[in-house]
Image (cartoon, rainbow, N blue to C red; front, side, top):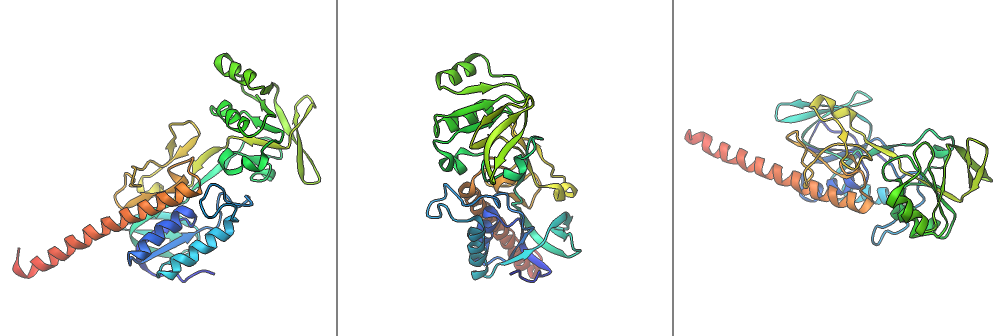
Length: 321
């Protein structure tokens, strides 16, 4: 189900995940005209359930989004399917262009387009992503507890990731892959915790009956594993904002690229707010939704202030003030 796109709104929300829908909910409940434009490619689509979200534990992501859409619509907001490909300044507002040629004007933008997970070039990783190839111990760790877990080193957080998964299973192996094996304090930690370190490049995954059974090295050795954790390189979906001068920059953690926003979600471009993974690479569903709610409230407050200024100007006009 998709609504018809109007010509102009107080706020266009770009992205229909938890952050975007919660932001739209706050705005619609504030009696703002708001539309969510959603490209329909949620990051957590491969996952069987949402975890770490109070009162919604294990709910399929598609069901959570369907409920969110219904709630936004129940307060008069709209949800439209479509891909935003550009956003341009138009006076005090914006013109948003969609891939199919449609355009819509907005006084403010709330960008919640999330991120893209870039995975190492290892055959099989993408196909198993969100199933038995994982990235977040808080999102998927319980589901692989006590299993044979492999961690594929591909970034600065590899040892940290090992330590987190070691809390969930006593059988954790670090695959150094193309990186140097840990040394010094890190090596001492892994040894003390019984974590095996396997050197040598990983060539692929072994899968039997649609189930991960091992990690295959370039020399042909197969190390039995039931799950593999990998730290993706996370890059904000933000190409359509280039015309406004907003482009992703390296995240301080080294985990990828994000758009910079202040604590309330305000970007460097007046009138543009950000929430969720597009600015906070590590945000889970709950924190993304909370950020969307905060940003939505801040956008409304900004519009309230503008409306008051306009009202004062109109009231003064007949008096020549």
